[in-house]
Image 1: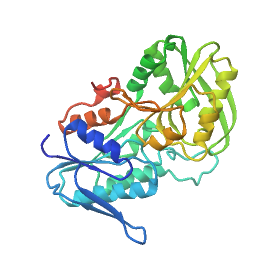
Image 2 (image 1 turned 90 degrees about the vertical axis):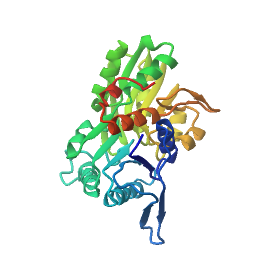
Image 3 (image 1 turned 90 degrees about the horizontal axis):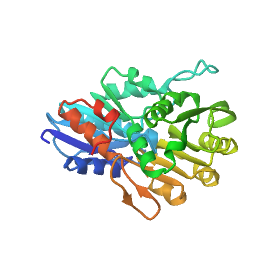
Image 4 (image 1 turned 120 degrees about the vertical axis):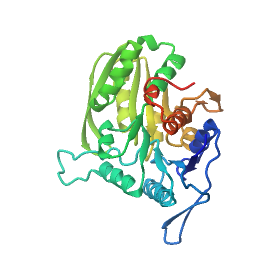
Length: 334
């Protein structure tokens, strides 16, 4: 494709390389380094004048450093006369800080701040996946394409769970009800949700199951899991309510703190994630984690791995050519 450049940040170079390979392009030359005082320095190693530039950087790992690196890369391309700069952010950072809570009226809305920073840096367009709250799109005054993992989730369920016709799709909290009802409707199965009460962040106090999972396969679906307290408590709740198997399908597997040990000790048949965040190290420490993606299966020693690069690459191709991306909301690219 002419007049297009793809650059990779340091958060997820493997995903960036797969996107470039899918598009038949080479990644642009960029050098990222830190000075001794930990300031981030970025040097774009080739001309971007008049080019359609895409910068791939996920909100994971050292999130603040990676976000700053993304902002600097966007600005570097913009002041080097790129015609358009698109930030491809598979996992949007600070997405959970999208509103003020009832208790602390002085809490920040950090997702809005990140949106402002991206716009001020010079981003003309954002491509992301499964925003924690889709209203975050409204924080921007530039176009935002929020892609969905749902088509790949449906494909994985049908291909890997033999008893999927006798399953219940479960949301681990009320906020994910819309997501699970959409999947349940397309599978023509029942859904349930779990109401949770938190005493403080990352700590669940009490859970109540609304729906029936007795003698069924329960499939927990959520957009992200961090310390995994919620999904592991939910799995225990579902088993105690009579579920014969419990799966968890998560778009963004953050898995920080005690997450891996909790998953290893929980009642999961498998925990399936996309690779919007690098998962190789976590899979090695947890044989229940499987990486879900949008490409054909590649058999590795610990699990079948697929990869979301296909859907992101197709979104980039369609955006570059001025085509609609809405096809990707309900289909997995071939």
